[in-house]
Image (cartoon, rainbow, N blue to C red; front, side):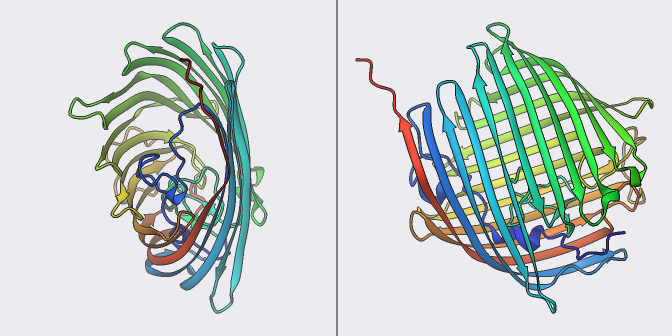
Length: 443
């Protein structure tokens, strides 16, 4: 079905880019690693340019391929360059980005993998009680992600966040857009509405094209500073290409639940939060299936620059790579901070499991023999040393394992892979514009 080279290479590229400096936004050494400075005013304009260049050696530890070529082994190198712009004024907040990346695999037959992405979002406060939001993004990438973990890598990916992902070497274009509003109905009550769409097309395999479209409305009421109630409804449709049967799946979410976020009495830098929601899933004009979803999060900041985060997520989703609804349970952990004033340590671990397709909600245990079952877990640790305020070097180790279902609802044809990689490189971050309007002292 898919006979191009397979990367599954968060490790083939993700390990080339150092992890984000997530230890602390402000505080000491605020300009190092491109972190935003502490701002005393609400109005500012900032433009930042970043580059990353690196090399890695990757090794496949265990693999099970189904009529596809092996994952590229050995040495690879690459570079990317990106620019971001952040504009904030009294009633307008806007953000834009652009990025170009190139990855070279020095195999027996060398080949390159270029790509780019660009997009932006804006929020406009029409009145003190009404604001409008909108945004769009276009991505042209040689890689296609087939799991929920979004990679931080040279290959451009929509909404890139720290982590790793299972990927295929499939050239694709993705275009997405969203728009919505937030209305303050009362002192503690607000109404939120939004709509979104995403289309993904494949140049060499149009039978795998798909699109999602949907909308969401939520009514929120804040009981206390840390506790709120919400009631809403969301509907999302996933439509596959006519070549794949042109199926339509519908995910309906009854968003009735609570939001809780509170700092523990043991310290102002410790936070606990959770949310709940109910999901209804059905194939077009089929019967509904219900599932209780939610999130739990814990965050602790310590020693001025260190942070640890733990979270668990239970969700019903439409994910790229699966032709059908996906029911997932996953966890995430982060530990980051400065070992010295210029040496940043960052470690992450993610993992989870799930099943694809309807009829799986009632299963209490996902068995190993279930053809719709998938699992994934990954971990990475990196050290980034700031040689100057705008230039640094990094080293990173990553291990990755995933197992995809053999069910035809899954797009991927690589069922099982374990891989590791070691990377080194350099990174630059330069602030082109940083203008802030500081409020005047009224005295």
